[in-house]
Length: 564
Image: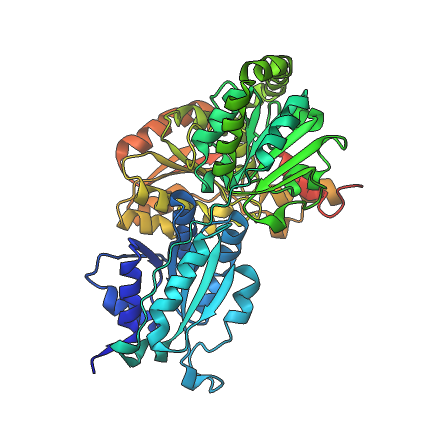
């Protein structure tokens, strides 16, 4: 009877799934898989830290809607991956983390890198799986892959003990399962009810979040908005599902963004959440009018009703539900009447949008030295003006300033850490974006604190010839923490918030990339032009004002005391 090694079964299962890239840092416990992926259709994309590998896999899942695959070794390789796994869970990114571990025969013998891994990661993932039989290796991979992708997507953990990977098994015992579960339920009954609520409303808003992106509902969302004449806002991975440039889109739903969001959220009498969670960004639901009617459409029924009672709960795929709603509108022939009825509301939001942005214009156009970070964000936004430009934001204050400014023209083209607030995502996300989109411009806006987390991914980008452009907003330290401490306790604790001037651009030059130093606002655009023209991985080190306080710093100062 023919036999096959466990590591070969794992490699073949990955190939059969059509996996193109595996983001990884090598180690002895996963070498049995490595050896059978060599010279295969799968590319091993190595990183300098396991966290970066998992961030890259998360970005792959975010941008393709297909599970990104990360692979790490046992013990410290596994623990190094944990923060990125938690971030993927918050962002609903489909991802499979494959980890090696000590052999079953060696448990509790004090073998190399021995630890109980699954109990640690289980609360952080959709499912934690351990395969103890070599013949079941493909079966477990199939289960992990479809679990990551089905329903509300998210990370799945899959553990293979090294002796299972090294073991031989009879080929006749191996089961090759391959199940696809689209998991696209559609609530047809509630579509007419939503249309009735829209008809009764005077000041409705739509907030499209990650669920709209993961269900690929952009076309249906635009049609829904245009048929009803309702204003739309977007959040998280939903940014760009209706372009910010659309006349009925008022950009980000975050109240801290200059524009109409705060006014709209507080004034709306009907709020329609499309794949959006009601959490911190909406002050746990308190930001909305207490008398407003709330509709929440979500692929995860347990998510519906978090923090606020929902008047119309809808368990459904976003795309399928919007298709139903659009059909109801057509059948009832009410599109023109709805649009006419909401025109006054739209006019009010346009005025609020103009008034809100007017307050930010002095900072967006500031000629101050050191450079105001909003001026930097505006220069980047104006330069990255192509529909297919990809911008990644990473940091505390830097992510806030970028999120307050970035115009998102296409879905999947703006990425940040999200609600988990994990620093260090910028370089790994951007490297993945460039791997996926070699012909698109990719730029990272990152803080000088964040850039230290995965700095050696600069070297990775240079070695792999990924010409990303990284703009560092260098305010000499941990700005968000510094300012929140000043607001909360009256002074910053220098030992934990001050870094000082570091020539990051020179470090990147030493690695073989291009470095540019900027300390005046009029230098920003020429630096961007030079960076992209160079065709090299480039670091633009921009000295920004360390005294500016972002809305995020204010919120952090009030952490745990929102009602104080």
